[in-house]
Length: 133
Image 1: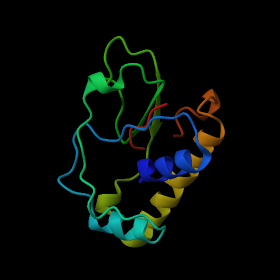
Image 2: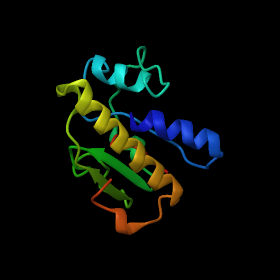
Image 3: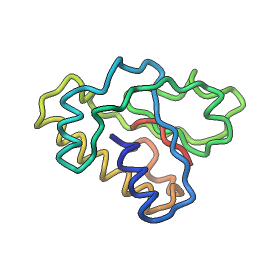
Image 4: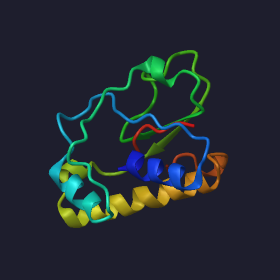
């Protein structure tokens, strides 16, 4: 969800931000309830497939945003970026009403980060998905 919102906003605002999306233990498919919730916002995730993020992909990235896990042990030892943890419930284990709340929270956090240009260290600890600048 976060990468869909981020990609749209980066494109709309022509921001110099590169998004890498994936996980350390990706599901086999995007959860149907997530597909449904994102369709309500105009995104078609029905053909998306979760992907694994290799630690080397994170080299040179300024930020790694995680959801429900730490970047510790995932990012290369030489990585000097900032890990922002979004401690949100797993939408795959929730009903549509809960997923809508999670979706809206993710959208709000993506908006906030992109609006600040990913520079505000005060937001650390309050920010899903691995995105990078």
